[in-house]
Length: 201
Image 1: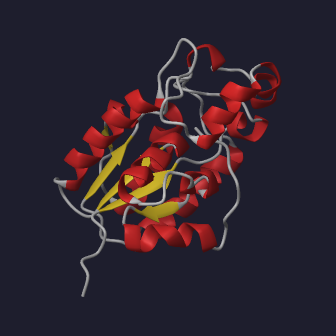
Image 2: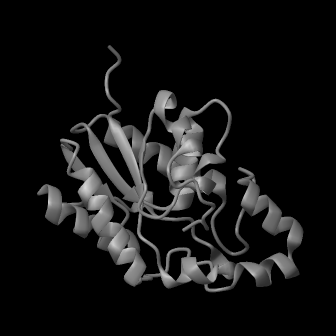
């Protein structure tokens, strides 16, 4: 029998920026009312697993989500800055629609997850990929199984390291979803109960 996944990923609950379609980057954006409910639902699902460790991005939306999970499963969240969302640079706090109208080619590269894409004045996906890979490497070698509460962009990068067919699945990961970081199981995200398109962050 195959060993269970050592790492599960979870996207934070919804924020007002997610709802508006606005780049939040590394801003300290809190969960909205819907997001707080999603965090509680995530906590219920997480309680069905016997997690040995709980990791999270230190950004407010991820930490609030991790705190909700922590109360349910009795583990203290371990913050790791390498799990933060991409630094969106000059696009931070701007609407997706505004950027799409002003810089359509660059916006398409962002949406497609082009590894050579870099936010103007911010971080590239390649740079973010290096830190995410290092974080996942360390987490996989610590207590298992581990739950990692992070962001859409981080999930896309983490999946791209483990799936042969690329890094598009994170576009279909809802806020608050729980995802095994395992090539045998991650494909089911595409056919899950709630395969809705969501915004990164």
